[in-house]
Image (cartoon, rainbow, N blue to C red; front, top):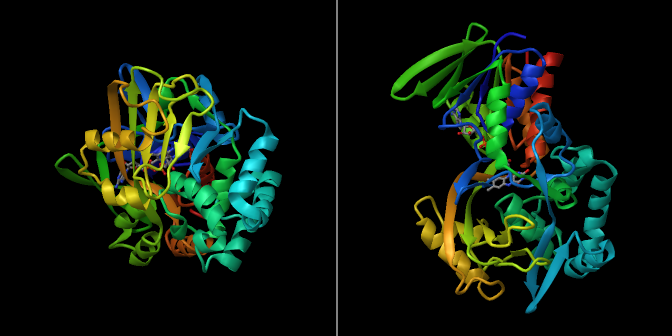
Length: 435
Ligand SMILES: Cc1cc2nc3c(=O)[nH]c(=O)nc-3n(C[C@H](O)[C@H](O)[C@H](O)COP(=O)(O)OP(=O)(O)OC[C@H]3O[C@@H](n4cnc5c(N)ncnc54)[C@H](O)[C@@H]3O)c2cc1C
């Protein structure tokens, strides 16, 4: 395969470049930021790298784990699945270290009989075939056909929405249940049914390894592609590097960006495609990770989700043994009204501390350091009848040889789903669909 341009150095672009290399292609990777990683990435907190996006790696992330192995392997540490919430003044916990029966009974009591009736077939579909836990699969496309004229908020009964559905959508999609749709819910369930680990050295180590490993990838860091146009069977990328503008021609291009950023590239050349991409919703998210002098959590209860009266959706221990490191996530509607790109990080973290103070050891516990990141576009919440939108996007692309799109709006907003999306993007070149 000839030289291929990949636009975007997030995990979708990295996965695409990795698979292209495996197929013997030379890759030019364009990344507008100062480093690769995009929404995944680490920052040093008191000498230790901690992750903002992409911290939790599912045990079922087979594609991503194969990638880590191909890079020489990195150590993982167990994180599990641990959450709690206040219901009627009582703290209710779900915890993978406890018995399955106990957790099931708790889920049943939180979902109520009506919720269980609707959830069980979906859960069984994902359990039976893990691949149904990505976006755009036969089982959930049929659900979309029947139910995507309503949101999750009206699909599930109220108790199930408040106690099970909302904690999942604000965390994974940055969205309220009335901003998410049943046909996409399989991609959430797959994540809920998994159990988690994290990279001991953080994503930073992985990104470094990838840069060293990728002999056939030329990294164009700080190169922002502004327009994608077409001339004589070639795809022309118009990009800015510092204050200079340039262009480069390719016969094959993979656009590995969030839909909203991909849309900007095609505004003038394929406006119909741009307007389809603009229909995919993204919501902002902010993450603060703070280190305290003493343990904030008790060992068994390491995380809590908060309802829509709070600006944080979740607060949890960074690792199973890091009970003095707290990861605060600000997402959902209330967070959007309180936190924006201008918010003082100190203000945001103090607000989060006030919220968790009644439940955890935070008062009189000295905060020694913290890091904070606001991300927009942050979390993808897709669209109603999303698979039909994807079909329309593919239809548009048919007229443009050599152009393929991927990203977290194709198979889901998880690292594993980004790898699946990248794998399929490359397949389009192999099978001739994108060539
Ligand atoms: C706070 C947070 C926590 C998360 N936690 C988890 C988790 O624990 N586990 C999990 O599996 N998933 C998690 N996710 C989801 C996962 O991180 C994302 O789905 C994934 O990182 C998306 O990667 P991407 O490459 O598609 O997009 P991005 O990461 O957004 O990458 C796009 C890249 O393209 C660059 N770019 C943008 N425009 C241009 C342009 N015009 N020219 C050149 N370059 C451009 C950007 O700088 C960026 O580097 C989390 C996400 C967030 C935000």
